[in-house]
Length: 310
Image (cartoon, rainbow, N blue to C red; front, side, top):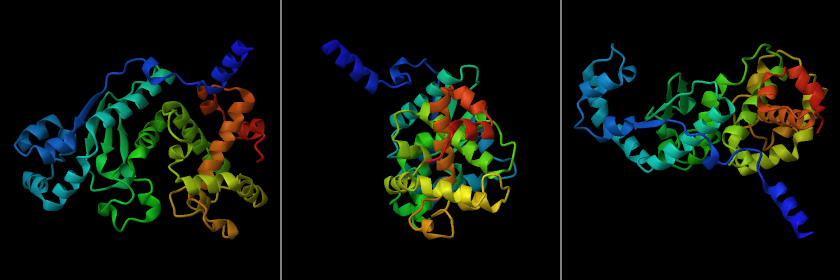
């Protein structure tokens, strides 16, 4: 009986994903470019231009770069990022890439990671640039950081250190999630659902709401109103609509989703992405499909075989 209970406990607590220490090694080089450019002012500009030519457009004169290195506002921004610890940044990025290599061993992933400042360009928090993975460290300072004053709250909620992995996976996702082949709303939400499922595999240790970058209250609203949202989509015949407005109402970043009804109150933006994720998860559970099989499945198959109806 004791052995049976032990097996039951182990079975309930075990994860389907490998532990980080069991992942294959992945050669990652981290370069803190913002420290070289703004921190080590003794490093000659010519040396930086020679080593990192892709950061210095030829049409920009050296005087502009020299002025930027010592600009008081740029230095203030740089100083704010020095608390973003190098070891933490390296290990978290390495783990995402290790999981990606584990699940997609044939993919040639970036091996050089470069952190830099982008003047808080939150649309570029992480960029997959083929052999390079770029990280804007000035976009992870925390939602309440004074440097973010004036930025809408729904955007500031995403600018926190805990969302680093989510931004990295989003940047890498186009390597693994097939391109959209239809403008139908169903296809759009399923594509986002596949992307969010990828998060479960490449950062399995994160809290569920961190993948979609919701706050706890936003996640709770989505969970409590899942059936209401789905019924709205079905009753208004939105699934096969190609109306571009649906993308802005339910898929892109916004302070709330736009039902034009009582559901607008307290709703998080991008609720269509969350519904797509829930549908894809249901499909995988019912079919037993692997990650690769789910990513390859078409939207109508996922809708049909998931029997999604919360």
